[in-house]
Image 1 (cartoon, rainbow, N blue to C red):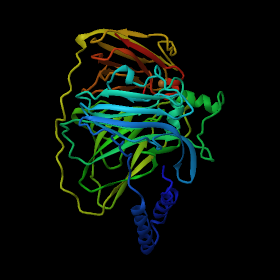
Image 2: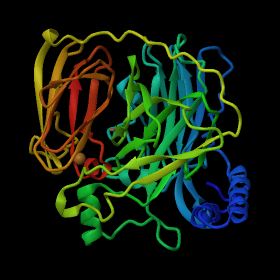
Image 3: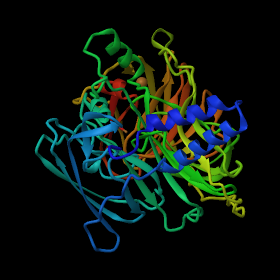
Image 4: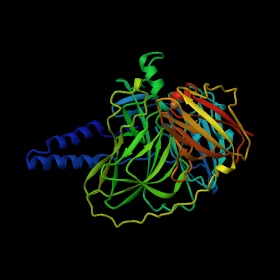
Amino acid sequence: MSSERPSRAAASLLMLGATFFAGTSQAQQQHTRALAASNAAAEPPLAGPDVFENLSTKPGTVEISLVASEARLALVPGKSTDAYAYNGRVPGPRLEVREGDRVIIHFRNDLPDSTTVHWHGLHLPVMADGSPFHPVAPGESRDFEFTIRPGSAGTYWYHPHPHHRTGWQVAKGLYGAVIVRAADDPIAHLPEKLLILADNRLLEDGSLDVPEVRTHGWRVDRENGREGDLLFVNGEVRPTIPIRAGEVQRWRIINASAARMYRLAIPGHTFVQVGTDGGLFEHPVERREILIAGAERVEVLVRGTGAPGSHTPLQSLPYDRYIPQTRPAGWDSTHELLTLRYADAPPVPPVAIPATLRAIPVLDTLDATATRVMVLTQGMINGKIMDMTRVDVEAKLGDTEIWQVENLVGMDHPFHLHGFQFQVIDRNGVPEPFRSWKDVVNVPEHETVRFIVRYDDYPGKWMFHCHILDHEDHGMMGVLEVR
Ligand code: C2O
Ligand code: CU
């Protein structure tokens, strides 16, 4: 997406130069520092994605037009890729709504492929879920209509969900952010950034690197989930976030990767985590690092504790989520996602972070009427692969249930339930230290996670699945019917 931008490769070479020459004469050092500084100034700060244009003038209504089509884009400078794009861009525009809003989406599929648009994490009627049950054929249109529920303020996202083809279409470029805002957000005064994390793999000619079926590479992708060496934040490689010393920024982070998990850290800094998938926590939590699995979201406060004029990366530290046989070379290296760059200006006065963010209603295990055991093995749930004609779990509208997800294999599987936010009860028997609303929970190798959910509204057939898209596409998915 950055065709008109100065080459980032040149930018990082200059930065390398600055490091390399440190230790030579002072004049030389000053020269290289000046070069690096001027280059940094030319480096555009993290942008976008732009917000959808609202076609409605009615208060409390957000009406948008969404088109999925083929597009030839410079995903990285100097290479052009045959991509799929929402409204011509990767990632797609950002959907901004408020609790209580009526949302109307006019979707048109201009792809040569059948697709759907899934509003990941939103609590909405089943017909608006964009699940594999409701494909939109090439050339067809579909309207999605729903109301944003009170209490659901948070960070969500949208992506295609056609049966067997989700990983491919996301790799081609189809993903975008949804932000739901509350009327009474206790940290609305903080400057905010949206970070959509994605990765990809391109061949020399700019086309997607997708191995032929039944080759070794195909098997590795199928086991691990497809990972790429190109790490994007809002479609950019290694962008910059400017910050003032003393400033506190609110970052909403979405993991839109097919499989990659990010273990986030900023050297010399700690995060204050304030929320996850379904919005804010009750109280902020200090964290040195944060693991974000596929499709999860986190909200963190980044405090500008660095010195004016300094810079530091947002890192993804190594995390071993793989089975040993297909653990990729270099899995144990640290990646840099972006640069946090301090203005050369005096610190800003400190801002207070509220100790209480909101109240989260308790889902009481005493109210649970059933425990659903989900046994994860490689590619299967309860020994079965997905069958669109089968219902795996039948439940009654209004019921509260416990799901016990047992991972029997030697790799992590992030487990996602459509339609309903849940609360984690315990992980391997260790009680969750505090409440939060989630729709994805990572189940590490050989561990068991229990969560509680209430089907308070919206009957219908809802998917649950592993959010490693290759696993989902190969059938690590099932159907919950609420009636
Ligand atoms: Cu984000 Cu069924 O998925
Ligand atoms: Cu999986």
